[in-house]
Length: 400
Image 1 (cartoon, rainbow, N blue to C red):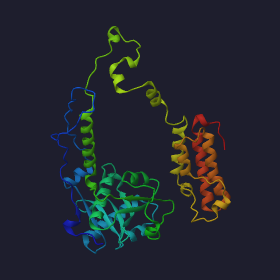
Image 2 (image 1 turned 60 degrees about the vertical axis):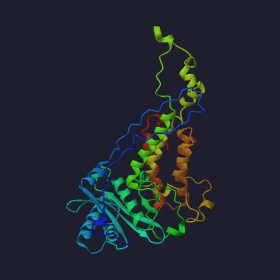
Image 3 (image 1 turned 90 degrees about the horizontal axis):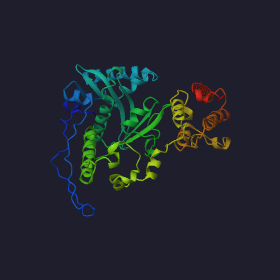
Image 4 (image 1 turned 180 degrees about the horizontal axis):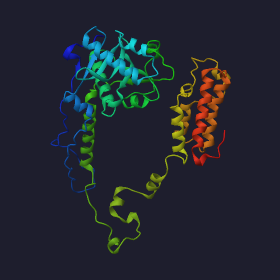
């Protein structure tokens, strides 16, 4: 797939935002309502769409989005070189010659954020697989001094709309490091891979320590208009609610409080009775969602998952990759399983959490020789865990 040329290769800014019309009427029926009078709907007030600086800058012509590949054109090579420099700076763990080779590879395409005159401030390099309906996002980065303007999200929206309009691609796959997982989640990516393995296995490069993520695009959605579309949906829901809501009614305070506040039964207040509230509902709402140690354990687990040595333990060991693992290890454990157990409140005490964590490390050392990278990673991560635990005064009694 070749990129579009000249004006067609520039991703244009969207039109001025519009808000839902306040003139539209919401029809409602109160035939089932016990109220004798029809409750008037409150007027809908248009809410201005909060735009990111990236959208405003694009509309004002300060930035533009260019789709390029190595077609030997002067401007294309300048933009690709700018992208290469940004990727090399923002992705220091990647070999520089490897980045250069893929950016200039003619099977790859790039979409770049360009300021005049041809100053590249960020972009994405990807490879579409024709006939397989997916593309691999190889590199994605924004200049460090431009990362608070919403460039990353706006760039991904441009990429999705461009790819849908110019190819059969409906899915993205990428390997994300621990620092990029949060960004990709916000852009609709998930760790759950639903694409059939024969379609992509062997076609994309497996990066050690990276987490494979997938994004499936919706055919009827224009992603550059997604924020406005969600706002319109929200306004439509609010309009429906206003047609039946009684929240505009203001009730006088209880007569018992005329001479000062005093204790009364909430059920003596007519409006509370009419709302359907009960003391059981209040008691249920006040119950804590998780145990007393949940927050600290979650913080500890997140720190462990984001550690550089956590990559062998993030997910269960695959039976396909290591055939005899489950014959040797009878009690398998990994960090994603621990996360599931933590969310289910299966760790009543820190000791329960540490027991599973030690199981992760002991299993690794049992199956792998102590000189392997896996065993060394287990030792480093375990040492890190205990250092974090020592920093929590309430857990000072815990020892390795």
